[in-house]
Length: 198
Ligand SMILES: *Cc1c(COP(=O)(O)O)cnc(C)c1O
Image: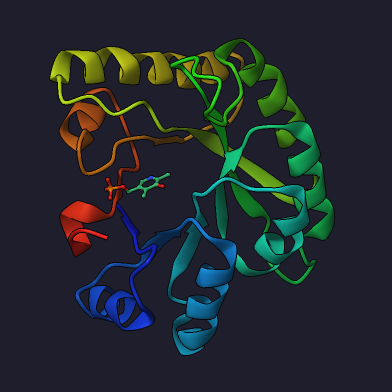
């Protein structure tokens, strides 16, 4: 489980840390860096995951502060992250964000383009390709949730069948985490169900 701590203060992250949680997800770069800095003495024990939309002008800060990025949806962003990842840090762990619902407003590569992007990411020296992330349109209907999540899983399986070394299927939030686990999620990103309403 990835604990999504966006909008919650560092003290909340510390409470979750004290309860044993080690992986935290953040959406907003400035807010995240402030928290990472405030919790600097826990830095080597916490895995920080960037799960928000990522613009080109923010890639350097992300490459310098995070362990993972879930929202790589185009090659330009991946290239910048690889170039800007400091040498003294481990490679940045990367998921390709896919948009399986076909909504224009949402970020994410199309399922058809996901394999080519994943292959390009896997070839970049300072990135390590880990898998696929998706943010399906919310639905209260478990049948709709399952159908959508199954589409994401099929993109993940396509990468595997292509021989890419992926182990992470990042899907499921507070409203659909049971369905996501049922469809093979390896990393549910949980905010509200853990910390309460934002
Ligand atoms: C906010 C957010 C979550 C957590 O959502 P909840 O519904 O609060 O569990 C998960 N993933 C992403 C990408 C988010 O932005």
